[in-house]
Length: 105
Image (cartoon, rainbow, N blue to C red; front, side, top):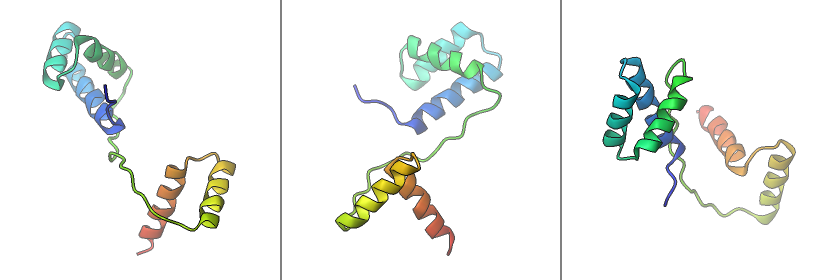
């Protein structure tokens, strides 16, 4: 079975939070969420339990996709070393660098 994205998890968690904010009883909320999100009652209950601890909805980030580029071997080595020393994933490091570059416009 495929895992859902972080964005989808955040959407479901926010839905659970809204159900609780409306004052739905837990049993009703479980049934409604299971039906509306096409998930099991057990999964719905887990989302609702997690949502109970929230003070506000969580931010929904963009879904991540693979983006393949070809770079010189030496540059790749430098990027990996830099990411390792800063304890960042390659995705996080490259994402930060690209956001900074695009913000210069």
